[in-house]
Image (tube, rainbow, N blue to C red):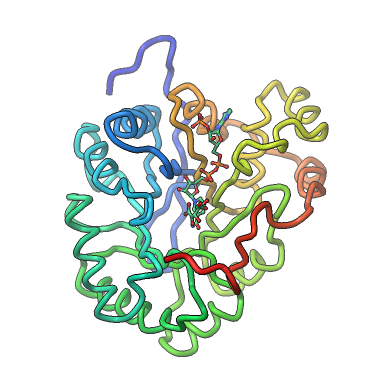
Length: 286
Ligand SMILES: NC(=O)C1=CN([C@@H]2O[C@H](COP(=O)(O)OP(=O)(O)OC[C@H]3O[C@@H](n4cnc5c(N)ncnc54)[C@H](OP(=O)(O)O)[C@@H]3O)[C@@H](O)[C@H]2O)C=CC1
Ligand SMILES: O=C(O)C(=O)[C@@H](O)[C@H](O)C(=O)CO
């Protein structure tokens, strides 16, 4: 892979083994809002920097761009993990099978590495049927690993009780303002890997918090790197989105150091709750 002196590769992003035996990188690229040729170029740059996990969704309307970036990357298909997500309007057994076919066609990568239910949409109450279809899709080989997003402890328990199959991943809002300690403990108990969405809290005031700037300066790293390493230390896979190759490179360069326990605690002390009004018990996303 072509690398110039000014853009050295970042240390390799390690992987973890999920409860179904598949591997997931410990950090990936969020692709929400990466669209069109510019989006493909951003994703391609990330792959050149060493990203091996791309996170998309039907609702991001960029599965085709993700597929194009992966196919054009020169990296072997099996070295890259692509996660996509089923939208609320496709909940239901038959609807899920049809939606998966459409995602497979849009991606054009042969199979989906990680297939997630994007939101539980509890008022519709079809996520268990949706899950049954996902189990079948995995058995058919169309999908390698199946998981969920924005599921609560009760919803996870219901999936396991009614189907006997535990999700490999639960992708949830998680950042220093909302560290999700209780849900992470549930995940640890069930063997579910946590993924952090909006891991930088969308690069809000978070990176200007005195705790964050002080700890980052003391280590000679950027605030974003400090926050992303905090996710890694918690055992959660962050999927920061950046359209910019240099920021992508910086964000991925968090595997050459670790944080001490008191640093992790100080960062977690920023807790104040959800950043957005996206409570999975009430938020419905179609
Ligand atoms: N499952 C779910 O319900 C959800 C999933 N997601 C997933 O999580 C991903 C990440 O979350 P997202 O909401 O995008 O928020 P992030 O916390 O990843 O923040 C992204 C923002 O931060 C900026 N940014 C990133 N890195 C840096 C940096 N080093 N310095 C300065 N600015 C930076 C980006 O701008 P720029 O591009 O200009 O660098 C962008 O504006 C999404 O893309 C999506 O894949 C998100 C929300 C919900
Ligand atoms: O980006 C996602 O995955 C979502 O679920 C969206 O709800 C997103 O968070 C958003 O902000 C939509 O306006």
